Image 1 (cartoon, rainbow, N blue to C red):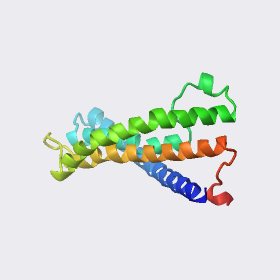
Image 2: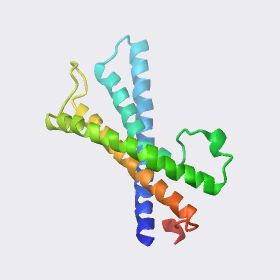
Image 3: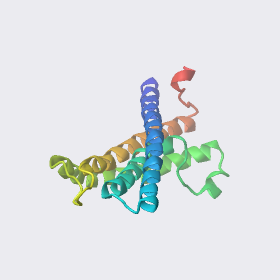
Image 4: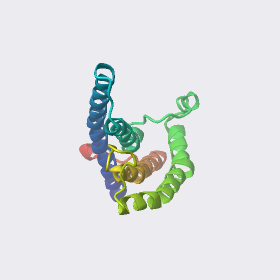
Length: 176
């Protein structure tokens, strides 16, 4: 049990750290969009690099932040049912959701994106557009990385739910 608790705490801290990183990247995205809007409307010009950077940063935020969002229970679910359940009912819902939906879905994306990411990294793929970002392979790598982080956070949620059902909720690092 202590080993599983340590495993959960490690996953939770990694996704907490990634969430902080995503927060800073979000600030960067806001600044990039601001610069793009100023350039477009005040100077009547735009750059492919800036436009690509916007969607690269958004993709990074969405993919890498998914595990953090699950850690803080921010994903969408059918709350009309879930909120009416007691703690055990919510734990059962989380455990069943993780086992039958989250993990299989994430594993499918990881398996199917692996070759896609590998091919992109092997040629250091860049933008096909002149003036575009030469590091497109990094964004493609975040597909696999983001779903690995989400899978790990799903495992942590499943373990927490199982412990809750058994009446043995593991302690966080700061509580032990």
